[in-house]
Length: 122
Image (tube, rainbow, N blue to C red; front, top):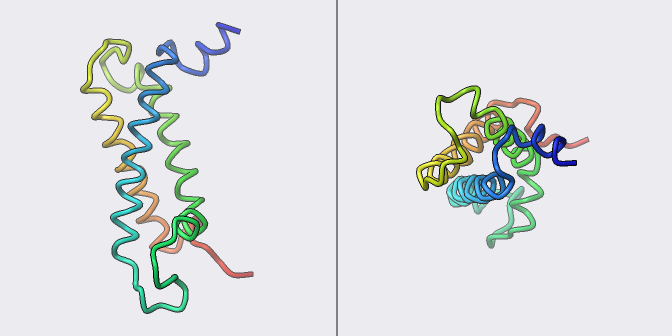
């Protein structure tokens, strides 16, 4: 079982992986809330008042894509970058926030351009 976890985490300590995911999640939330703040409140497609349920329903594909990209980045960080994530350094936690923010921003841009992330009515 330990070997399986090492394969999944890329030899990064599981505690650090969880911390990186947590801080990347903060980056996703920041970008989601910034984007939600720019919505057209007069549109018939959006609620008048802020709704977390609507936010999640409208952006679930984008959130899933961001989480997958974050996992891939954390998993292969040792190969992509020239540093050891297991070092106890808060810099990596800040980088995780930026990664979460940037991947969600990328997903937001793809969604606005009419990609597969766009919600379609059937």
